[in-house]
Image (spheres, rainbow, N blue to C red):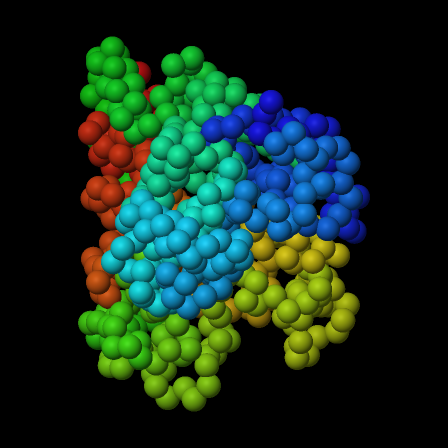
Length: 552
């Protein structure tokens, strides 16, 4: 008997005619590691929420979900609290206490475990997760990677039989992401916990799972081993870069490479067989730079009240129409810099000029000051209304235009964002990617000239990232300037004009995008990692494919 049995499952949210998931049939065995992937809005998050009664959304459900042989609706939430664990992409939305150790204990206390059991489990979990050195720390002093590890540990300490995760690495840098996924593999292999994970960033996780469930348009398209799905998934653009390159060059081969090392071996064998040198085939275009300064940061320093210095000797100049991407590890000061620019935090030293004006002379927080807006990492932070339409309408409060003109702007914005038809949906019922787009749309109605973005592609699938990137490219052509903090390496490689690393509170070596990524070893794209020995300056999958095609 499978741990989870899903039969003819359909679910429809209130106010929508179309089902979010439809006719789903799936078994998940004990001890399996299962990846659910595919386009945004395809039903992935809705599906996994049917496995966690505590977060199952309100709506019309048909069909059956059985857990350990019983209909999942027959269980009360308290009886499943320690049996089914859930980890979201935003740990702060689920972390409740102030201290690390207390967060780990909190769940066990709710299960009424004895003091002896709690102490033993605390010791085990802190050893397993390598948390011994930070058990006594305040939660708000942790980096993003540490916070997500804490979130996972606080779930695993209750020893669940099923662990469900919804894009858990969406807010993590490449190094922290790899560490977190390695921890999941250990949990699966060494403890035997069944894991179901929804993820858009497939580069690392794809090759470590037992089975892949590919979904689109509310249904399951294909299910199987990773290599089988890699060769048969109709949405090839949603697959890891290595797979995309191989499928475009050799088609759907049976022995499909999944990892960078496998891709490197495939590329080497192909180049040796064809007898050509591929390097220097791709010639990057020169980067055009506007000379109009929009943002100038000089010698900025900032420390929190506990004395921890986050920014020091921070310098940057951003020009009109640039899409500037700031990358780096969690906890290096990227988001803090945005807070300082928005005046929600005040620098202790240095000078900031926005559109030529010193920010020290601004008395109020300049969200909207000289047409500067800030898009936070959590889009819910700017949602105030009960449906999508009213969110966009609220952005235009105070504008001296007619209601008819406002409605016309809303219609155009919904179309631009791909959210037409969602007017009456509550913002919280959107997928995480759709929330990001709605938040951007709300800010764009303010007609900004400088947009600060914190992880803007979090939760977006491949097509929506292309849509989002095309949108910010259009804005850049209109001399709108984008400064974004991001861990999405491929998106930055595709759309940013310049990039820099944030390290130890400083901005390191701003460079044109291609020069930046082709010179990095870790903060670079998987296409570049795979092909750099032969095609040194290619940073995107299609560039590798193009080079191989030209070399034939």
